[in-house]
Image 1: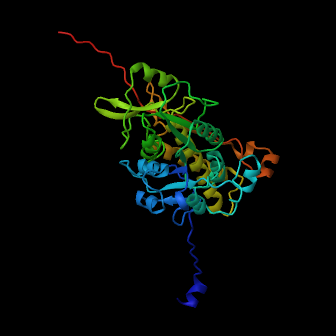
Image 2 (image 1 turned 180 degrees about the vertical axis):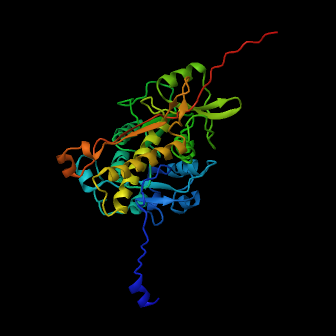
Image 3 (image 1 turned 120 degrees about the vertical axis):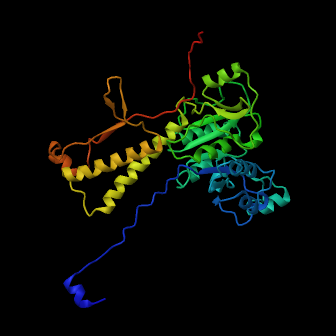
Length: 378
């Protein structure tokens, strides 16, 4: 390239790297016990792209982790990957807090203890959750080999996060034996076989759809045996916001699709996605521009990203399209409001923090039932 040409026309081209988002609204994390002997090159948390990889790691077919992973990879829409986290042995600090440890076993490895038959003291499921809750890349949580008390403790933790937690029950006794039943990030599904891991299958199948494009009802799950329920039993599950998998018109389907607090699961997931999408878009704006001026032009740039996010939500099917009322007037799917720079005080402008931005959006929702009235006449 000519140096003279560079002097006449100085042209520099930079390659902009997009902001990569670590959030994933289609990936599950399964927590359970490590294989006997510690497994093969096993990490505390790792990703698996097939059931064969899970087996190669050391989990045998009768293990709870293998059964849960099998439920995931057995679905029609197989996941690209799943995460598995193993419960760790209790630390010295945990042991000092009240748990017992056999004398002379402090230095034994997990493999040594398994070989000698020494009981291994593992951390609680809730401790594992607290350890991995900040790890990016997963959104839905499932436990393998847990009981109701474990699920209760984990649900309490998940409620303060932006994740979802699913578990299955086999008892028709209601209400559920949980300390709270108003959780908005935890949901239960009734099935008659605990070993089939219906909650993992359900998470996997519904996570194959983009947030906003799905409903969690009427999903067919591979490898899951439908429960035989009377209409009275289904009514009780409906009142308790407990989901179930049963047969209808020769089809095995999930019914309800609600979290314990009564909201639809797809609404919670779409809300989390929408928030994350808007944050990433606006953050990318700050990274892309040398400066976003605190003027109407800069505020418009922020507004454009808000609108772009809501339009993406419309395209996904989570936000309603513009419709028309009976008078032919448009009913917008969403509206956006941002302030004028001149309306903000000197103190607000000096803080470099833009406030007063808001939007209103109508959820598209989903039709789960239809009521039709008709007349037959001669």
